[in-house]
Image 1 (cartoon, helix red, strand yellow):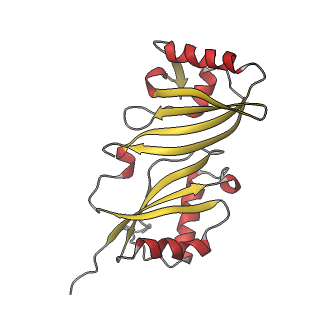
Image 2: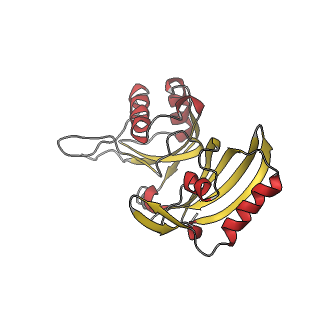
Length: 216
């Protein structure tokens, strides 16, 4: 007897203000509950503790919203991506939104192995002029090395910052745009960039706007 053909769907979604303070584990659990309530035909892992086959491209830091987060699902049988998105909508909790759903080749490398960069928009409190903030940004970008310490080890933050700029004024300060390297070659965090700028504690908002993948 022929087994049904499994399907790999890529779901792009947004995480809003209402749930920005939940952990990555809680976000994964939220998605599992949502998918079960929508009766999605999820495929499960084998073993003593079967888990739905859901993988996320990258964990979103607590307190950060996301505009285009990405996860892959393996389904037991094929569905129409548009119908799947429509089916999920009534079960989504506040703060979670499906941006798009598409079918991808099931043998593609994992999302985690292909993430190479991320873009952030970060609002910071700043009482001085824009020029003074831009000077700090320029100093960081001009530095040959920016030595930081994480989990007891030192590393160079500078090559992990692909771009950094002041983009606009916001109430009480300015918004910064960051493109940061992320993946097996090293990962920069938006809060570490702020700390290197002397802005630790000045963050008022943060949004990961986009993830980038090798080969796309």
